[in-house]
Length: 192
Image (cartoon, rainbow, N blue to C red):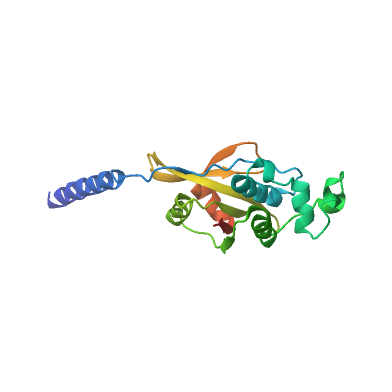
């Protein structure tokens, strides 16, 4: 009888504790107005995310085309990649190249950042700073996306952080659970 009473008491305490946790206010959603621009070649995700940030900062009329951004990032004349298909221009990029393009054309500085937890990411986004995340897509391959917003969604399993992801391989912003991105998150750029 004593054990049954303790079990009932423990169950009530756990239920009340769970109800208290679920009753905590959920932070409001954050959404930075950044247009998702598709990449123009299969390997230009890096230049498309830079273009997204530049366009959000400078406007569409002051945003260079992806071909020009690729040429500048690789030290070539602007026409080198824009005068028609040039196989030398269909190349992958790097985190420093993305940062340099955003600084040069967008006038925004950025900082390198390691993977982080959902609340740190939320506070970064809530301060108006977008985050470009490098994701592992294979043993030696990667992809970059822009995290432009975040919401906390109540589910039966608890509150789940959902990211608003501009993926240059897609045509629209996608909701992606943080738990899906966390295991493949390699590095990030925080755009200041």
